[in-house]
Each structure stands twice: as C-alpha cells, then as structure tokens.
Image (tube, rainbow, N blue to C red):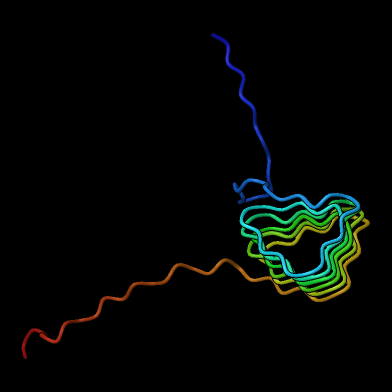
Length: 138
C-alpha cells in the first residue's frame, strides 16, 4: 500500500494550531488574549497576547504591544514585542518599537526602528547537594 503524508509548517518551536484569523478589512479595538496562534491581515488597536505564533500578513496593521511565543511580521507594527522564542521581520515589514526575544531574523527590505534585547534561553537550574545536619565526626 502506498501512503502519502502531508506536512505542515509553522514558525520554529511552535506546534500550536492556528485558530484565530483577523481578516483583511477588519478593525479590532481592545485587548486580545489568544490561546494558540493568530494571523492578522486587518487592523488591531490594542495589546495582543498569544500562546503560539502571531503572524501579521502584508496588509496587517497593529498599534499595540505584543506578547507571544513567536512572531512573523509581514505588515506594520507599532509597539513593543515581548517574544519568547523568535521574531521574523519579512521583507515588507515595518516595526516601530522595541523587541525582547531570543532570536531575531530581519529580511532585506524590512524596516526596524527601535531597540532589541536578545536573551539566551535560561540555563537549567543547578542542583546543589546540601549536607544534612549530621556530619561525620560530630
């Protein structure tokens, strides 16, 4: 029997499904809290938090702060990005604001006006072995 497998691709380190789309021509005002990933092709005025990847399409426009696992920006964003893993600025992206992330990928042609703080993934906590109150010889 011949089998066919279908692969889907998502942003790095993100296996959460896309379950929210804000379409072209839509305008949302207010705070958004999304479980999993979101794609924005319309306009959002307000802060956005997502447990997955936030994708801004070429016609997307965000005015607000963003917190997410990953971000792929193809449109315009004005605000602060606090991204756990990776930010990708595609060739037509415009980002006015600061970024805090582990990895930043800026394509030729993208515009980034702000500051970036890149933090490495925290090292695992070291376990120390404490001596019990009973030490030999006492």
